[in-house]
Image (tube, rainbow, N blue to C red):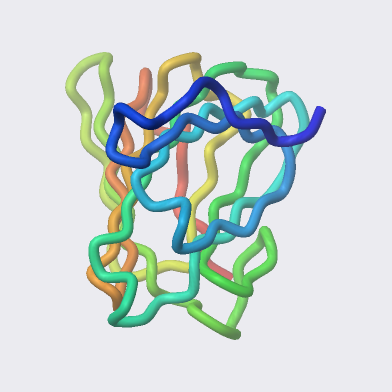
Length: 151
């Protein structure tokens, strides 16, 4: 199944909901969207290229189907495992757990993050940029259902 838009958006200030189940390069027009994720098979999501002109870009990702495969969310131009080209080392990642109130942090900037095969339906990832760095806050059933990617 291809990535598909769900519902309509005129009453939500241009925002929309889109289901992702395969590789996607996000762009400027994806700011404000909510992405429903189906990790039945592994795929990669690339964030837009960083620049001062996209400061304020944001989105939310919610696990809708916990199919047991990893989803890699990486900076612009990077492969699923990360790398040293394009927007490498620009993602700051922090996770919070619904169970036990645990918090996990990853020191320094990384290439991206993994939405692990062990995720649970409703695990969520909020992504924001100031134009130079990506900031990710994850709210998950259990710490460890996500991880930083750094090659």
